[in-house]
Length: 257
Image 1: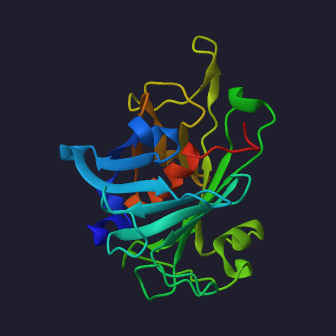
Image 2: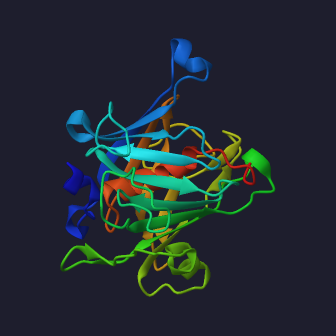
């Protein structure tokens, strides 16, 4: 399962349809003792893939991602990676299960240096929650012949994907932007055409496209019920990358809304 969720989708496989269930704490856990969890499933046969939860007592948002619903510890063999944000919740980094080369942190279940698998950036939104979020996302390029992605193992922030992206060094990056939604007077919100896969308006909904191929939606995410969300993706993303990017949309953003 770990190999499957980390491997890039193949171009010939087309769109992989999934959904995310948000599991909120109940009982005493709802009074600050528990954490909301997010469970990812393949639509086909409702196959469970991954679970995620935010780490507590962190200055910034930090989501642990596991292939087990019940075991999300960083030392576990089920741990596959994390999503980390800056203080404002406008910039996110996606890492696998390796260890930080600078912290001396031995709590990871892996002895290898961590690999950076993507970034997501949200622009400030002066219109508040009525205005659509603007996203920019970058992941390492994948060789379609070998199905191997370019490896980023930065030891400093200057070597990371975020810095390369801001400096427009995009030769080893696959770059995506959100497809601009249109205002709909009937629902009083900005909407996108999800072809029936999304049924409820939400500021969290998005579609990501490559600027050079704007008809091909690489990742779409949107609400279908109070705590259920569609997540469909295709090459070059892996299930893990698509899930981590989608988790960034759940996170509260001080500067965006």
